[in-house]
Image (cartoon, rainbow, N blue to C red; front, side, top):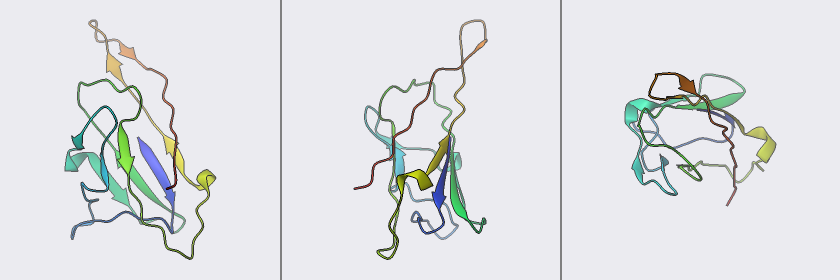
Length: 110
């Protein structure tokens, strides 16, 4: 899954630039943190910050499953349309044939 944030919106990172597990974690019907190797945070673009999240677990997802806590400066008013999301979900059946379920995203500011 790729989440593109406006340049003004950031996430807290450790000394290596990896997002902290306290800001990107499994939620809803799941709990816990994602493997640190499964999250990439790219701030190199001049226009946006990008999170790439990979979870290779065998669990299926239905409903809320991920929380991303962002830092937004008080001088910036976020617009929900400035956050873009794309996902590629793949799972296989018993014959190792790919099955692609529908995916929907919802962003909430609070």
